[in-house]
Length: 99
Image (cartoon, rainbow, N blue to C red; front, top):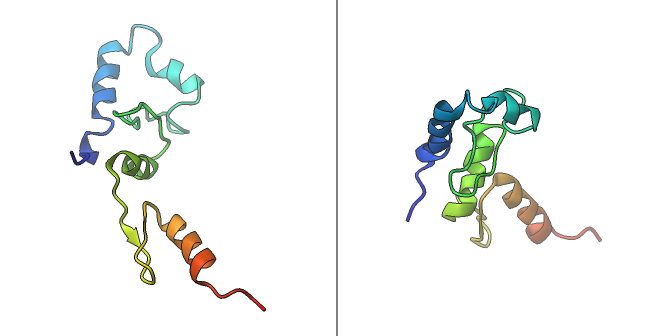
């Protein structure tokens, strides 16, 4: 089943709105370091509960659940979930060793 990235975090926002006043709400979670500098607690994976500090890091994390690998090596065809992993692969596997 494909992962709907628009749904990631939506459930967390709904739960917070119904329980925010009960036990200190979002301020209590911010004190524990969840949600990053801006305190955005809606950046939580609805599948595993991992809290991310930015929407882009949440999108990258969501790829671990969906299996999407949008960055493919043009030399060998191996695919990666992040451009950084592709760059490391190219450097390690397709750059000639200095002699």
